[in-house]
Image (cartoon, rainbow, N blue to C red; front, side):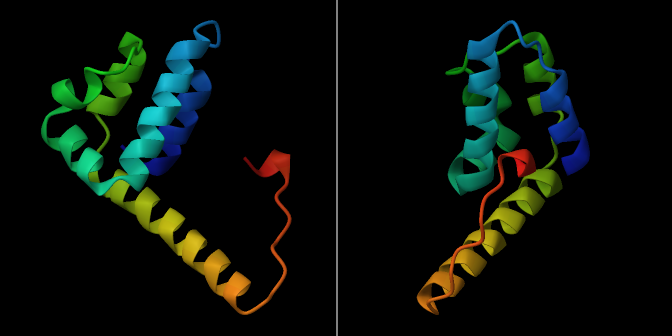
Length: 102
């Protein structure tokens, strides 16, 4: 499963179940940012997902995500954070964040 599919899938999640969507977004963020959780999700998805209230579609998406997808997302985010920190350390102004870019 590639990064584009993961992000596209989040747009297809049921909008009526806001709590589940929030849980899904939290879980994906945790998998991207937390190496230990990412490895647990890949090695033992049942255990990793047991603490989250998710729909069947969300569980399916998360069970079928591959290591390369999560690792790529993690590397992209880490690179962006590193670039921002370097710019801040050099005294450069922060780039504006536009709501439409999220």
